[in-house]
Length: 41
Image (tube, rainbow, N blue to C red; front, side):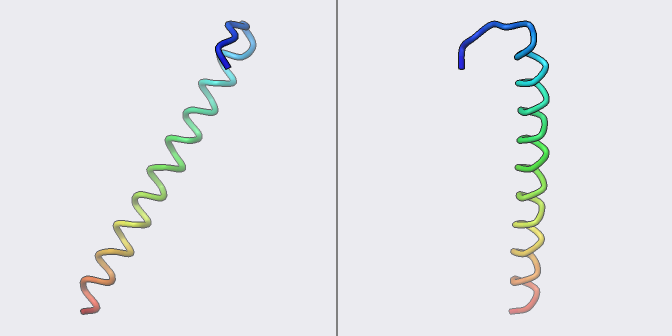
């Protein structure tokens, strides 16, 4: 994973961006679910 290929840097950058987007989307979904449960009680 520690290779310094010129081609792997943009790929790793895009992969980390995709992971960050997915994590933030999941966090948003979890908080929305939590507020929905709190409002339901």
